[in-house]
Amino acid sequence: MVNIFTRKITDELTSLVKQMDSVVGKNRKGRMAGFVVLLTDDPDEAEEQLVAFAKKHKIKNLPLTVFDGLAGPPAYKIAKDAEVTVLMWKRARVQANHAYQAGKLNAKEVKLVLGSTKKILP
Image (cartoon, rainbow, N blue to C red; front, side):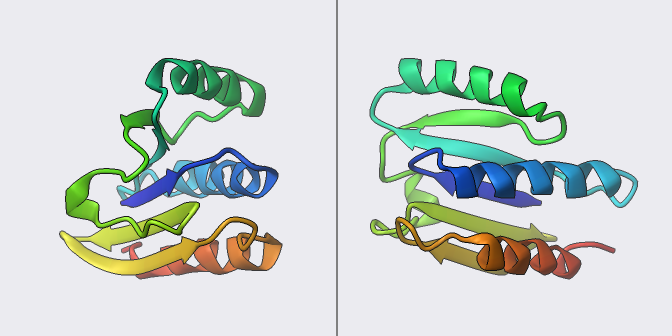
């Protein structure tokens, strides 16, 4: 399972989501799944953003959802200074945790995150 939490939609996040959507699609038989959560104080506006985002970028394998509150779900303990947090787990155990402050997610880091999917595939 891959979970991408974000507080902002950026070009780098778009790249990550598009590529992760492809990885999840190619590994459906391996039971890979994931979802994206936009953390926001304005869920109505954010929902509209995500609908447009999914259409524009043809996201088919990663559900996109909204969480009302920038802090995110308390149980996940999302870092306050992280713009993007990617969690990957297998059998209820976290296998990878990548957190990026604003502007720190770049092409090199996207590649690193995608490489971490090996830890959760059969």
